[in-house]
Image (cartoon, rainbow, N blue to C red; front, top):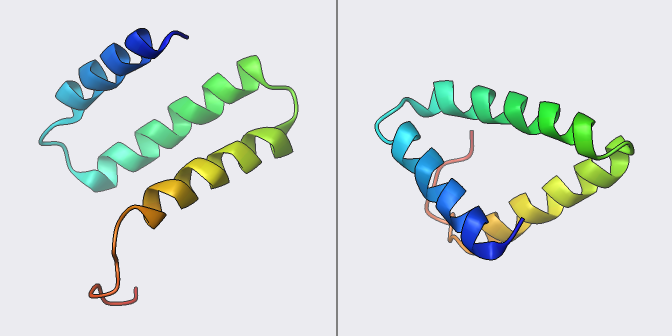
Length: 70
């Protein structure tokens, strides 16, 4: 997918999800990601490694030091 297509898709998804409860959003997105991964990546560990990297990078960009542990 080209960068401009990815950006447009991200903006469209963001607009649809705006105002939705995060408890609804995360399971829906996780399910969509899982279904997409199954159709394009036969190695589950490769996909999980990629997702771990993306999530780790997102967390590294945000300072969570003042948030309580859950």
